[in-house]
Length: 295
Image 1 (cartoon, rainbow, N blue to C red):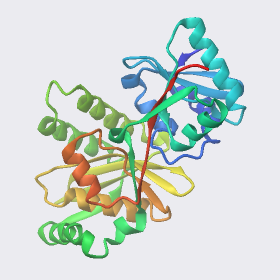
Image 2: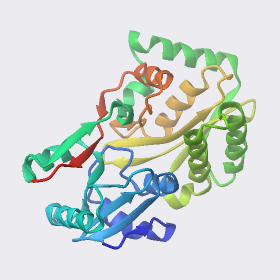
Image 3: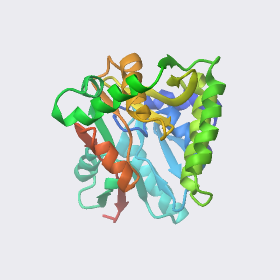
């Protein structure tokens, strides 16, 4: 198998396979793969009319084959490659449907471990827009207070206002990123790239202004026929209600036609988990790792 680094010029090739994937996972889009390619050291290979991604972040792992071909033929080829290269066969981004497929096609040969920290939060879009009922009372109050306290406006991100978002991101980084937090710095790099390469990646963005200044922005894309994914969201914490407002306004203007919105995982952070749960997800898109234990 010939693995190659993910590059901008590979967009058409990779999308040729991803268009056959029906997943609500935030990982299954070219934009996500491209933006995080450096952090996860991502490569890809074409095999049996399918595509396989390899991550060399710490230990080597593979995606299950994706595309319109025969997944068993492609997966057998990956297992053969691992034997040839003396690599333990480990597979990332495993969904419950993938687990079922492995159990059916390779009974007793894989052990799958799901990780709560990387499960995506999936919400009903209209619920986050309307914020009806007692369970959203606090969120509604934040938005009402924001509206009363500030002279604010929402607008789509365009080439003309992108630099203002980049300037806001630089200030946000200074306020929130500890020097030793490598993953947070990687997230900032991804956020910057999502703004600079937004049009190339097919991403949609929105920003929030207070007194004319950008205080929040968000970037996302439709990843499934019924699901929009929010990849990036940043707001100044000292602007009360800014996160709640950009969350709602972005969905109103950019994702109202989608039944669900994926707001990604909580990386195991207790504060982030509490915040995401407070919006009452409809369900979690579970993800795990599959270990090949042999026939």
